[in-house]
Every structure is written in C-alpha cells, then in structure tokens.
Length: 125
Image (cartoon, rainbow, N blue to C red; front, top):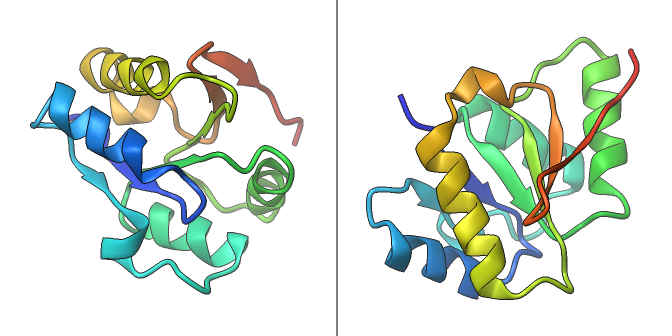
C-alpha cells in the first residue's frame, strides 16, 4: 500500500498539481476537495488521520505543535510533511513523489519531516 497525501488549506495548490502531473498514480487530496476551509489545525490533523493520509502543509509555525499535542494525547497520526515555503515547487513535488515511491505508510507514522530536505523533527513523549 502506498502513502496517501492530504494537502492542508495553506499548501500551495501548485504543489498538488505538480505531484499529480509527475506521477498520476499518487493519491493526493486537495484541501478544497476535502472541505478543509474554516477548520482549525487540530481538526485538520484529525481528518487526515481518520482518512489515513499524511498531512502536507506549509505551516511550520503552529502545525508541528498541534501534531505534538496530538501525540501527547495518545492519538496516532499517519505523519506530517512540512513543505518549506522558500523551496521551489518542483523540488517539493519531487520529494513527495520520492516519498510516495519509496516508503510504506507505517514508515512515517507519528513523525514530522520537512521537505524537500527530508529533515526529521523528533518529538519526545
């Protein structure tokens, strides 16, 4: 089974389009299609987890903290990828396609990675 992605409301839609163009088999739900507008960070994380999707976001300021609180509350998550705002769309899209092609869903469970660098953020429980 391949990883599936959920775009956060703040993620540039051009990234979703670029990933879909590079690899049409990738399951990447857009924020618009999922109806994320108006949801707070905790609700977005809950929705992504319920659907078994890695959340892809630009929100490096508050989303990792909400992710940490989720884990501290004993809830699990398929994981989160923080797309660096300064990174080129193509670089982020390529990193997401590589993740899709080379990882299993459990490989990223309860972890946060920054793309395109794939730097891991570790939360202590």
